[in-house]
Length: 229
Image (cartoon, rainbow, N blue to C red):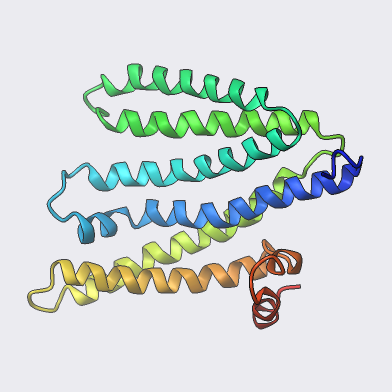
C-alpha cells in the first residue's frame, strides 16, 4: 500500500521492521535449539541415534534462515516482484542439491551433509532476497539495524542457556536415579533463565520498539513494564 501511494520512506520502514521482528523471533529460537540440542534430544528422544543432537544443532541454525526467507519473500511479493523470490529459491535449491551430492557422500559427514546443505540453501535465498530488496526499494533498508541487535541479544541468551544448563546438570547429576528427569529439569531451568536474559537484552539493545509492542494485545502495558520506548 505504501509503495502504491509513493510513500517510499514508509515502504522501507515497514520492510525493515518486518525483517527486524522476524529476526527478534527466529534468532533466539534457532540459537536456543543449537546450544540446547543435546538436552532437547535427551528429553524427548533418549534412545535416538548419537548423531541426533548434532543434526538438531545444524537445523536450529537453518530455521533462522528459513524464517528470514519467508519474510523477505513476502516483502518482494508485496512490491510486485513475485518472480525474484522464485529465482532465489531455484538458486537455493541448486545449492542444496550440490551440497548433498558433495557432502553426504563423505563418511566423516554423512547425514550431517544434508543439514549443512539446508543451511546453505536458505542462507543463499535470504542473502539474494536481501540484495533484491536493496535494489528494488527507493530508500535502502538498514540491514545492520534489522539483524545485528537481535543477533547480539540472541548470542548472549545462547551463552546463558548453555552455561546454566551445564551447571545445573552437573549439580543435579549428584542425585540418585536422575537420568531423563534430570535432563528435563535442567532444560526447563536453562530455558527459563534464557528467556529472562533475552528480554533484558532486547530492551538494552533496543531490538524492539514501542511501535512494535503496540502491534500485540496489551503490548503498551508490557512495554511500560519493560521500559521499552
